[in-house]
Image (cartoon, rainbow, N blue to C red; front, side, top):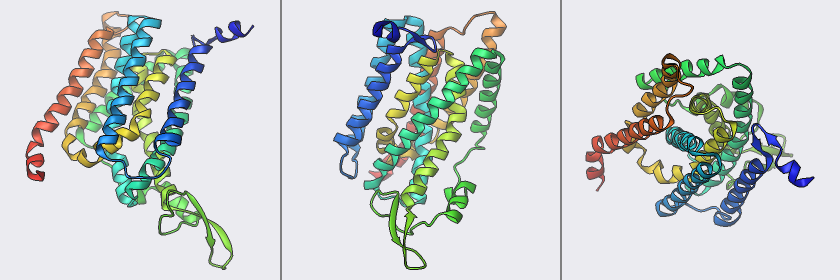
Length: 327
């Protein structure tokens, strides 16, 4: 009976595959917060690079397992999705850095804020992907809407219409500060503290750490608007969509600490991401025009990797003088 239950299909895949992945994610989160970062401390570049390499290696290794278990087509689609989601996460790093700078978040508390931020992101992405999968399965034309939306967003990004704004000007931030007591200073990495209110009685106060966390979550909602349609334009398999998304997100904290200090060196990566979004959306229309069931996955992977490599390489080359000046 148990074996039969575990082999039952959930969104097209056996239940055990979903449970195994969920167990892996929970174990990684427990290892991260409960073991590696039990005490708040400043994460150095070496530690962040090692963690980043670990998460990227683990994500690609999972892609190898997908290849072996589900076949080459699924393997290539997973890796393509993982690269796209990882590259969009790079863009997210720039926004998170601006949020932390705006709220003057001490470096020692940033990891804990990002941990809870990533946990919220995982839950949010799960809901959005589940909703998107249901829409695509019920209405195939939704994929065309996703593709058209990606092209528009890519053009806007290339034109520079999505520059980050001061989080203090956000309507959500203004709404919260009007309805919550917010302390002017941090209280460690705590999100709430009890201290005397205006009447002298103890009251619950929010801290700037909570405000920064809310802004990080809000930023991901905005990024998910690009991210979720992008991955569905690569593959409509809910398992590949979810796993590639989550593996890219899991390494976001390590990626942030590795790149936050050198975000200026990747100034031209956003242009490459913009072109990538246009390509991902455009290939849906190309496949339809050519009468293909899908755009060739190996070609899609090669173009994706090429665009990202070109964007990173050109950024590093154009900003090489800044590196020499810092030295």
